[in-house]
Image (tube, rainbow, N blue to C red; front, side, top):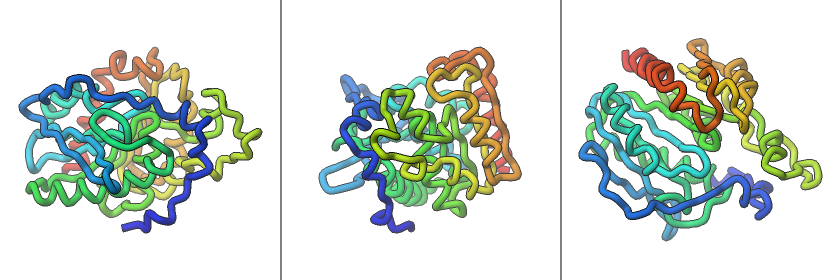
Length: 267
């Protein structure tokens, strides 16, 4: 395992940045998940756990470990999880600190540190449950940072990578949300370095991005695709969609691409 104590993103943990990067919200009502789903609490720190929900298809099926976007929570995927199950895919969305059923307070450092602990926990949990299918890591929007962090460190343990609405560069995103990196003395080297990380990952990769994404431009998806180190890689553009309508507008192509991707990986 990587030495997580060496990960340093503290320059991004300033209140004026965190207030724009994270919009944590709790899960209302704590509704019982579908029959094919099971809730998990993953310990990541003293008195801090991360909520996750495992949508079960089969023990031999491939599993997607999914890091969602900002403002979303695991429960938002209760209707989508069964769609993966229908395609024979185990689907495991996880939250961040302070989101859904998770405890703690979100920071960039915590998010990037926690994904390593979550990954190790999930590997053990799947093995103990007799799950033998390949593991794919997927990140949407903000979650692309966690997914690419794992891809850069655990290439031999990850069968494939899916990035949906992911950002290639952090500085333009900070400027969009009202933060001036120049004034704060922050450079791209201080960021998540997604573009550098995807260069190191040479296993099957799928990039999905909306044509008219107003938050993370389609050019970011193209940059990630071009930089990707995989020989087997695909860029899927969802025509006419933006950041928040990508799944609704591109449902058929979106799910078909992921289904085909997982079939190839599973052999």
